[in-house]
Length: 290
Image (cartoon, rainbow, N blue to C red; front, side, top):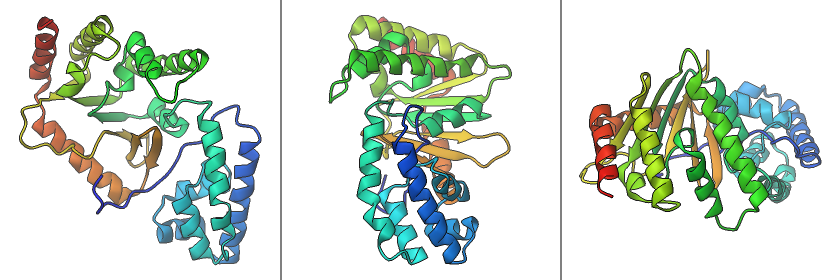
C-alpha cells in the first residue's frame, strides 16, 4: 500500500489452544478498559478518536483480539495511561508470535467472517486464492514456506484450508468473485503436474454457475492492483470489511473509509481484467501451452 494510506491494524481472534497467552491478553484488555472508563469515554468514543472500529475496541477489552503496537500506543496517549500500555506492547507482540507459530498464518477472525459472509471478493497477485486451491497446491505452498514448517503443521493447515471451501457448496451461495493476476497462472508452484491440476480446477470454477473468476493479463498498461492482494467481505447485516496479508502478517480492517477505498480499488481492478469468459479462455490457453 502507498505511504499515503493509513492502515488499520486489526489482528484476528486468538486460535484455540492458546491458553496462557489468552489470559495475558485478557489482562491487558482489562487494563485498557479501566483507563478508558477513568477517562470517561465510551467504547464508541474511544474508537472514533483512535481510528478503529468500535467492535475492535470491545474485542480487545474482552481479550478476544490482539492489539498491535500502534493500537496500544494510541490508546496510551488518548487515555492518559502514562506509558503503562506502551510498556506492554513488546510483550503483547512476542505472545502473538508464540501463538502464530502453532497456527495458520491466516487470521481466525477473517475465516470466521468469511464463513458467514454474504459477499466475498478477492484479488490475488501472488498465489491462487485459498478458496480455489487444490489440496496438492496448498501442500506445495506450505511446504515451500520459510522458516520450515513441520509436516504435522503442513497437514493441519492444509486440512483447515480445504475445510474453508465448504463455502462454495452453500445454498444459497454468497455473491463471490475473484480476480487473479496472470502471473499466478503461469508460475508452476509445486511442479507442472500439481500446477496443471490447479489450472484445471480453476477452469471448473470458471464454468460453475454463480462463481465469477476473472484474470488480469500481463499486458495491461494500467493496473489498479499494484498495492498487493486483499479481500473484501460483507457480513450479514453489517458493513463491509477488508483483509490483507503480507509476509504472513494478517490485518482485518473495519475502518469504513479504508474499506471504501479498497472496494473502489477492487472495482477498478475488475474493470481492467478480462471478463469471465475471456478469463476462462486464457486459463485454457495456458493449459494447452504445455
